[in-house]
Amino acid sequence: MRLFSFFALVFVILCGSAKEGRAARYSGDYLLQMCAVNKEGQELVKGGKIACQAYISGILDYHALLKSLDVEPPGIDFCVPEDVGLNLLQLRLMNYLIKNREAQGPYIASPNVSLALREMYPCK
Picture 1 (cartoon, one colour):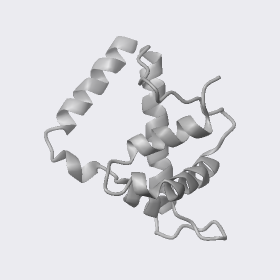
Picture 2: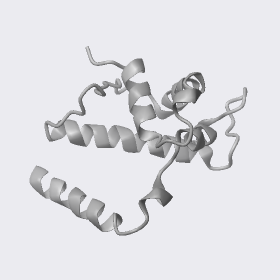
Picture 3: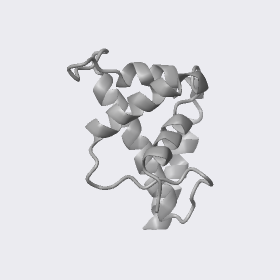
């Protein structure tokens, strides 16, 4: 089953690479806009909460896939406890992105998310 899942993932990636790849990428700045909430916890961009949390979930799922295949990205391992919800992850990520704004800018957001998760939830 693992082998089938791996090849299915490779197939999806290869089929998706035929399109312009940049169109699907989130920059750090764009992800911050999607994750931003006001003092009452309400999203600043309509649909931002679901976009932000879906992006975080994608990073978590991809990380879990790599670990299940015994492939761990060097230096970017993180261990988010099962009881930590997406609302908390969104708020903590938003704060991380604000504090580290100079390092993200127009660059792809996924490394920032992984680094934030590693800082917040290091494996013991």
